[in-house]
Image (cartoon, rainbow, N blue to C red; front, top):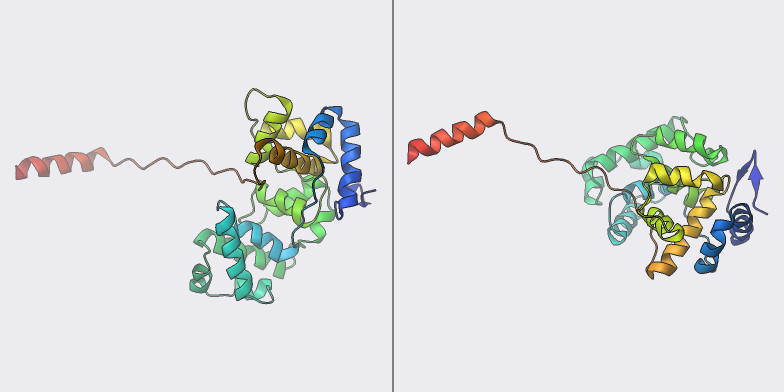
Length: 248
């Protein structure tokens, strides 16, 4: 049986995952054919704490290969990988490792929050999923997707559900014959029936996606809204037109 504390369930072992999936399918029979199609799959876990969260933040909006390369350089440069060392590092050093300016600010702010004991990145997993999500997204640079991926993969929180994940959305569309891919709001509502095993459902849907699409599954962060190109003021265009006509 999955471990639980204050009604918070965890997926620490393969046995936890399998027992939880059995309960999930029993609670929602719609998932039975999904589980049969997905077949057996392994539980994936990552390092928790400051290193784990930083690894996720540093990989945001990057390809798998690029994210892995940056993580490797970052962890090699700081051994041990401690929040004080990282947040006090020179900006030029962090940029040479491949971090963008926003990500440098994010890891520094997260490190500061940990140093000041404003958050315990391991203990946060003992919270109910929505409270844990809120505690993480209060940190600078940690959005909804990052928070849920951390809870699910680094802490094994069985009810964390990254509804904004594009691979999960597409898998749900395929698995349930939806006319279009659900957005984060629609998928969140759909997943309410899976509490307190929404994280188990996420693992199952990723496994289903892998089988149906025949490709390696990597959680896919939703892209930010595209920025519209700035329009030049009409006065500038007019002046430019006048200069051109005067030179002709």
